[in-house]
Length: 126
Image: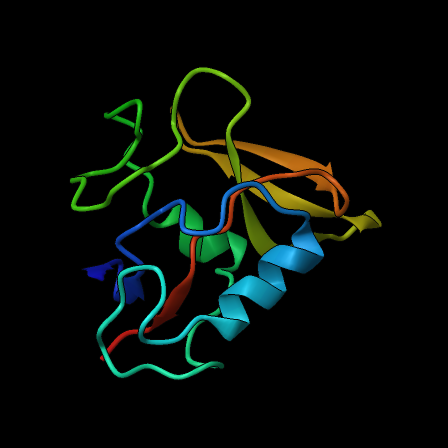
């Protein structure tokens, strides 16, 4: 785990691999101590998919590949290929689309729920 932007982020930024948005929500909500390298005593329901503001709060536009201010994380998908992370935020103009962030430079993109993207679990800060 790493604390950044007042939130606790899973250290492994690629615990689940590529998933649809619905699977990403389920995976994050089911995350608990004993999986993904966690030994924090957390239970299912403690972790969640971050909203778009939360994931964007990590972005440092002065950095690239990844665009993070410091990188205490493992397996961050940030190559110049199509490697986006889901947010829980719906595109207001299309309910079948959710906002994603590409961590190489911090690009935003609205994507269909059925696309395969990465999920990076977060939980409230302490």
